[in-house]
Amino acid sequence: MKRIFSYKQLFVFSLVLVCFASNLEAQSKKLKRPKSRVGISSVDSFVQESFDLYDKVYKYDGYAEAGTPLEDEDLDVLEDALDEVTALSESAPDILSDLDGTGALKQAKATLQINKAKKALKYSITTAKKLLVGSKNGDSEDEDDSEKTSDNEETSSDYDEDEDNDVEEVKNPNVSEGLEVYSKFDFVPGDKLLFFDDFSQDFIGDFPSKWNTNGTGEVVNFNKVEGKWFELKSGYGLYYVPDLKELPEDFTIEFDLLTSGLSTSTSSSSRFSIYLSDNAKFNDGNSNYIEVSIPLGQYAAFPFRVKNFFNNKVGDVNSDIQADIRTEILNRPHVSIAVTKQRYRLWINEVKYIDIPRLVEETNVLDFIKFHINHFKDGEERVFISNLKVAEGGEDLRRKLLAEGKISTNGILFNSGSANIQPQSLGIVRQISQVLMQDENIKLKIVGHTDADGNDANNLKLSKARAEAVKNALVNIYKISAKRLSTDGKGESEPVGDNSTADGKAQNRRVEFIKI
Image (tube, rainbow, N blue to C red):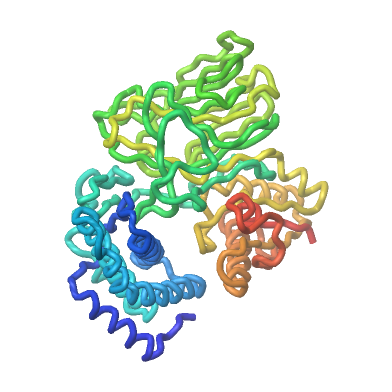
């Protein structure tokens, strides 16, 4: 599976290493990308491209450190990155010549950023080469690594925003995601995607392109937490509104939540609020809205708060629902919401905390989703969101499978580039198991599909592995006979959405169940 370097390639890499003679420790901390531009196009391009490659290699280094095996697709990406790094490093002398004739301050700033970019390139070369030739081992764990988890272990992520400090430190998330825990999880996501955003199409430091606000915020990433995250800012009357409207009667909302800097001194009024509203303006709503707020305080167990407001008057619900979710809040929880006509349900990870039959007093008037946070210490207590998915439906897949003999769902999620099922997906697998338990004569074929990222052969292999993972969950968790299940994979060959968009990719990553 692994590619072997040619001697020519290794020779080139060795030459490049000589060019950057400064010592660079194995990365337990992440180099910070400069936030401002110099104003010299060649320098700005060099710095941006260097850190883009650095981020790519750093991600795979994190996989290796966590013991996650690299697939052929990963190795292809790394090999391509090394080629790009080599070419980019060779352009450094030409870029330095572009500084001639510029002012002293601009030259100083440009030189500082070029040096940071060189440091990032050297790390990329040494680490990618180790990963590709299979020499990556535990030697990269240094004293800094051990220090990272000794204090404030509850903090999921943290970094210093001072540009002169060119590292950003992120604590290891203490996340337990055993599938068995989710075996009774009954949330079923909708099957018609209305909105999806993992911020993969946005630049780090920018406000996300598919959202609106009357405040501020930016997309960030971390060295120990996968993907990009949108940081919301705390403040009275600040709202974050995804570009989504005309919600149906039945829909589901899912997202991942990440926190940083929360402690026993965090205010009891520190909350993450989710609104269903009749407008997209920066208020709760005109005449109709629902607010559900999740407590993020840590020194005591604070309640969920739920209230509704319809036809310009306070509704029937204004409740505090007692719960202790302090541990969950610190460990990157997955939030799931299902609205079925008037009924409103909310889960944190596998546990349902809210189930109100008539919270939606009037249907077809709540067309927008808004988020709001308040009472957090600026720059110290921080809240991030990612993987927001809104889908129509949330229907009973059991009846559809029995009636039509086939269902397709993008609600079974896997870790990026792997066949590891994300545990919050087990609501769907559980419903499939109930169909099989009800009628022991039913046999199913499970077919996996991927998006078009990566090459065809790797995607075909991945789709088959994912179908097999679903089968194993049915067999091992729900005790379905393996003889009743067969699997296949189609890779990227049968898309149902546009692979150039995040929404389309999410639609294409799906699993089919077919009666045979």
